[in-house]
Length: 307
Picture 1: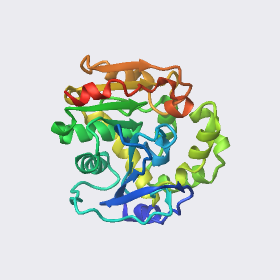
Picture 2 (picture 1 turned 90 degrees about the vertical axis):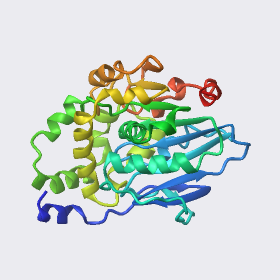
Picture 3 (picture 1 turned 135 degrees about the horizontal axis):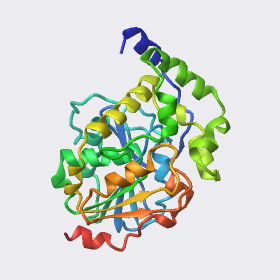
Picture 4 (picture 1 turned 120 degrees about the horizontal axis):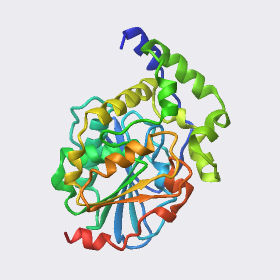
């Protein structure tokens, strides 16, 4: 990418969304990991990995039980969506060699969180959309960490997957020089202008979380890098990564206007039989925001932890 295009894309973006958070926030490289306080004794641990242009609040209402230890990733060069907490640098942080804004970089943040933070043996990693790719990449990098971990991949970007034809048609004519202009155009448009087409039927939580998508990264370059890296990662990653996933579920939406549902299913079907595929009736890419009814319960987690 030309330096002049990069210059236009590295202007800072102010954060437009945060929620009150009770817990600790650790900076890890150019990202962060937050661990929420829980009022009961933790019975299981969930690590949430948000999707493209989302933030960790995607998971906070889905996992609100007092016995759930919730650990939340903030991907590299994204704003940390918390109020009232000062981020600290943990002694276990290890430098990351990959380029920030990539799936590979964020997979390293996930692996550091998984290695150092869970206090229970019953661990679930829940990755949504790009977060699904981050989860699989993390497993590829450190398969030994995942032998007794359950994985939930919600409307995930998968090896050999594709973006939806609708998004593809939008991105096809875009050259590097057009990125700053295109992102400005979309981010200044009211969410209602494109919301229904891409996000499906709205509800209060979806409206709240999806209204400020284009303000979730610290700069526009991260948006472009995320898109280019997702496309590249899906194309070059082989489905044999699934052989390292011992226990897991694919949550496939009934309708998806962000990723290509058929390509997602075709990829998921390459996985070993330990991975379940749940074809949900979710009317959009945001399965658990549409309804928690499709989310697997924790009953099987103890069995997974015991291997």
